[in-house]
Length: 186
Image (cartoon, rainbow, N blue to C red; front, side, top):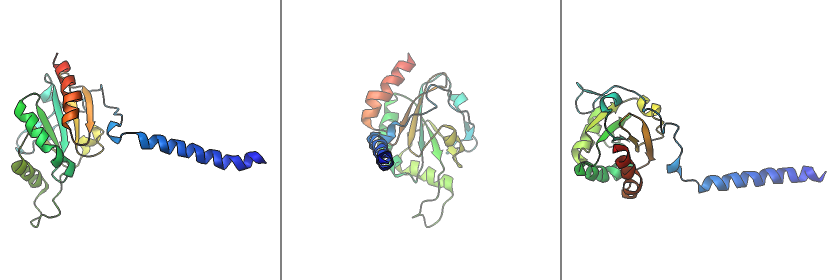
């Protein structure tokens, strides 16, 4: 009889423990099943030149960052000055994956999707060696992207070695990404 009364209390206590553990986790450190695996292959048109394509196979032989971004993404605007600084330093090539770009709500002319992304880079600067245009987001899904921005460090063999969720920070670049990139350059 007493066990009946303690069962709901025990279940409730267990749920509280799981909730407490979940609240202590950092959502930016979500594990990625793609780490240490080949970067998913794709061939997309480049954002700024539709006559050219971009594919991970084109990038083999170099260590690079793949930055998933969009013109509608507020956090992408937040990280953009850091990407511009990094590009100017020439430390590591940055390639973009423009993710599901849509017309801006404040856009009275309802420009085509690609034009919004082009305008974003014109206004804020272009840190990318090249940027692929992932209109429907299928490539981003293949990479396990939760949302923009996300940045992947990919080695010379085309293997994903690091994933950063959310806007890049100077701390993440200096303490995690660039040291690992230097090590991968070997």
